[in-house]
Image (cartoon, rainbow over all chains, first blue to last red; front, side):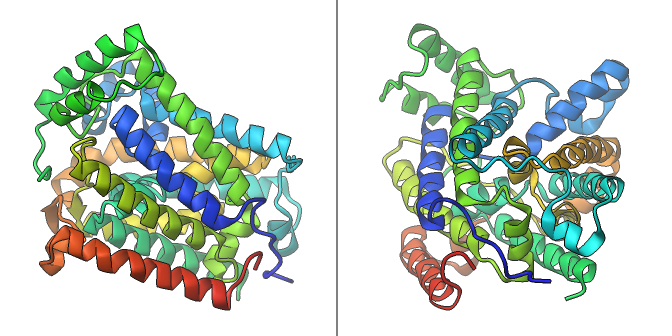
Length: 172
Length: 228
């Protein structure tokens, strides 16, 4: 298996990184908001929770502090989906698969296995993000660039946890 | 210093933005928004965002998603490569974004144009939550932002990841009462920053830190050049 095979992105990582840095300046200036992705999932989950039990969802301590409603961060997340689709479509990079080739090489082509592990991984990751107070965007970029101690600690732990898990899964 | 901001001033900020936004959506008015920012709180959670904010979120999200996809970090192989330490695309993007944004945002802040949004440091929660996040990151192969970008480019396995993220978020909310009374209290240091931790002036610290990040990027590029 060739784990080294990867062609990176269509654009230079330095160009993309610098533009994300400029984008951060823009969101601070125009929206008074740092870029972050994980809180939006929590809001959407709360909105879905309210459909099933409004009273229970609103009774939860977390949702008293983080309102389950459509806010700046929720539309930011929807924008990410749209922006990535535009970039991939215009760049001829639409993938259209259910099992990534690298996963298939190691674990086979079962949809159920890939989707089951992806769901589990997403759930574990969201729980960790909420406990840590952010994700790779919120802590890893926005928090780290403001020199927040907790963000750097969390960012390092994201990679320690991720590298260990990937190593165990792929046995390398 | 903006370390202790009062969330009660939030309504001022929102009403000012609304007043401005209703007249000229999407057009910045320097001098008005910065004034609003001066009084703004560091969180938006108390009150609903205005339509202008909602649209700005979508606009900035489209740019962010576009950049993530062009950077290649919507790809499972690239993200796993970061965890195998065989593909440094993620590190290069993150460190460049951090260095650029650090100079830019602290400069804007020095000019009084933006508020800071320093996340609080809670050592136990940052470490335990961070490690749990990492386990999920390894299993899924995408993070919350790049997972959405992955879905946008047609990696349909990210749908299961998104559903998992929603489920995990709700599960956290279910346990938030307990966690806020325990783990989140352990090692809670508030909004401390690296310069404060080492006892340096912020400007001096940044003047050392940005070249350090640049050196790391230079070494990464030397030993792990593009596309590997």
